[in-house]
Length: 279
Image 1 (tube, rainbow, N blue to C red):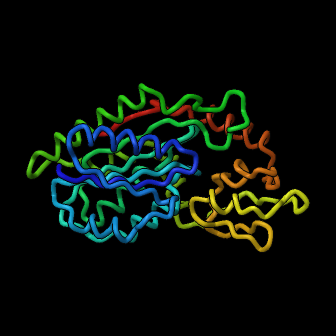
Image 2 (tube, rainbow, N blue to C red):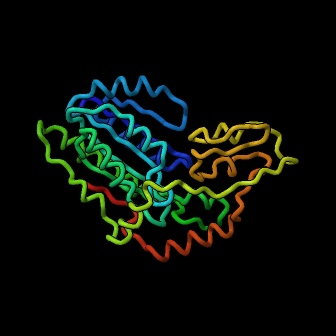
Image 3 (cartoon, helix red, strand yellow):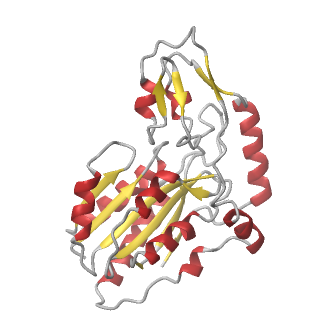
């Protein structure tokens, strides 16, 4: 592998952490790394131009957090716009908040395979739940940790070794469809349904129209008119709520109720293992 392309979106930071672990592991092997943060307004066209020149033994790593059991729309839109390839390897990876990792890896892997990318591996990595920043004991607390990072580095080692073969064996897509059949089928049936977000209210007396909410939104779903307005691209990462300096934005469903719902779903699914690599 001469070149590695790493693209990700990371509203709460966990996916970005995994992306950087991958990047550092590859750089230690003297592999050129091209990194793109989809939520940072970086040069997408330049990145795609470099990727278009990728060879069969190069690799594209794509990372997404899991929201409502799926990969987020920003990442899926990027995948949908990818140029077809003649055999560049690929590794989808996800971070999830300890409730259900859903079908995100399968969802991403399917699009990548249809574009001609060969699956070299995949990973799901536990992260602290992004909607529990006010909790004393959030689900996934302390993750990703050093043990998680060690598994990610192990994945990189295996992928690099795999790409040394001119015609390497690839990972079957079915391996990434690891949920129980009834759970997987139920989530897949929701793929084409509109994304229903939790409504948000803005306290106009508190709001100073500083624009922080728009700046921290990874999908540019917030605009000032003159107070924050949220469009259909929102997927409830709650960055706007978490980062508002005046605490002027609030969900109509209180954070206490959201936390209770999250903990109930954790008990229902009890998904194991929390971090797993697929090679």
